[in-house]
Length: 596
Image (cartoon, rainbow, N blue to C red; front, side):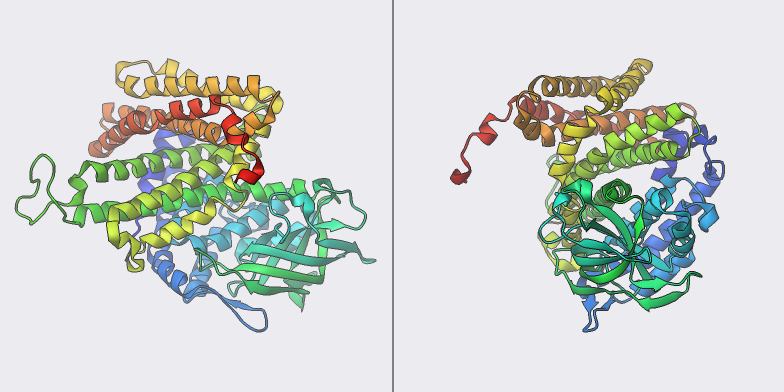
């Protein structure tokens, strides 16, 4: 059976030593997030993940969810009790506004907790994750009455939330949606249509499910500009928050999927269901983007989470599995064979996973901190810089972390050899679960196009220039001999990124297909450079702690060795991405469609 150990010390190293969380104490909620509080919260979240959720992961995969004749859905054994413990622990609202029952702690803490939940049990983690996205949408776009009615129950965990965008004929192109909304005399709307692939769309964990539904009003403009967002609760609440009549929304079926079997992925049918406007008419996509951006960061975390748990299990297996002898002679002559961890190719796979995980976690934490600045700072320039960072990094995080998360789950399976292909070891479940993260919340090709087509040129490239300035400023400030093995490769990677950016500026305007052909490689080049910058910051912190005689010297040395591996073995991939970008679109696009 798989194991999982929450990487709490890794988070504390990042928050305290790398990003120096005390520098943010001027932001609301941060003064309450002292190192002691952070450690206590993360250790409790780790305990919940390790002891309650992880043992249910295999159960959820085997049992899946069951739809009954009345349209209700039952989650796998143990999920309902686990959700009760999650809700009673206050985990749903640790970063939610205190005026609605939340704890008001920084948003980065929820992001960190969600990594632990998803490593332990990704299917389970999706239920509260979607609710937190819906909470964010209400906070930013709901009316005062809607906030008062829905937020306390959702933050308490008694009600959960969903996001309803996709329809049979439209996924990425939401301008094609057909679900219609008809305004009634009492101010409500009748919602009619079918939504598909709705994660957590029906279940038995909570007493109500609050669906946020994108629909089209009668006479609305064509395309995405004619969409409106509505709240359509499964059970209509009374004014005092008590539950009233059942709404006309039903689960028509649940999908039979490759992975995430413990999460109910539903077809939802709306038959003149009662809905209420959120935000403004025909501006639904603006409100929905709040949920989508929250969800995209959440999916990025899923990619990292599965990479982490896959790595942990592969490392244990590599230390235990005896097979062959080390190339330089027996390392354990008293045993019939050496453990496979002595073999360079096994080390290659383990180090690749480890180097990615630690840097990816740093990039997630850095971005979540910038999200807190964007939402909580009283300084306009700081808020703008935080928003710029979030906008630029969200597609990079979503696409790269899920691409590499899946790749790393496959690497872990390879470490296991034939046993990785057998269900009882649990590794093949990680592979199946990880695959969806590359697809939903905007397939990764769309993320790359969003980066190149929208985020890169936005505001004259202001966000991208800020990244260059910060990373290059770090290199200038850390020219000491001890940091050269890290900053020198980073400088080379940033040079590749600058060349790629310049090439796009010179070649994409006249031939847009050049941008489309370059998008995937540009995103991954950028991601590699960003992870390299994270490794430089971690290496600098490790050197500081070592010089001061603080912390675990062996652990800090492991950081430096892993950083060196990344710089020597992974960061050089930026050169290949640059070469592919500069090749242009011709060989990709010249064949006629009928030749395929």
